[in-house]
Length: 151
Image (cartoon, rainbow, N blue to C red; front, side):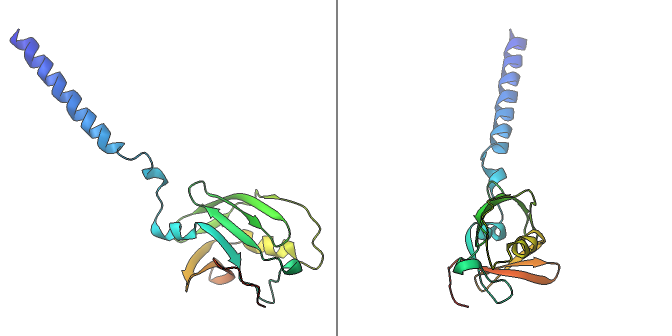
């Protein structure tokens, strides 16, 4: 009888300890979705800051919206709609070339150059509220949370 009682107590204690450890490991199932503060700043909609070398068609400004929880993006090239996936960490950003893009004709706009530059992005940083996309040490483009129509 004493042996059965000791066995029961040991089993109960072992179960309690394992349950506690399991609860600590699984305390927040969303932990795997939490991103660093730097990556979190990337989330949301950004508008291209236009310049003379990367102008947009018909005064339509390219925009991109990053969903950091799904690692997906959507937006506009300034003419066509685009969406796809990306990989990001605190310093690097890679846009997948497996993009979905509508195919409207865009007279007077070098959309292919815009997409080529977007695809060569390998890094990013933030500067004075702007998202700066880079390739190596070169700045590819600057993006703002605010839509501006100035040239």
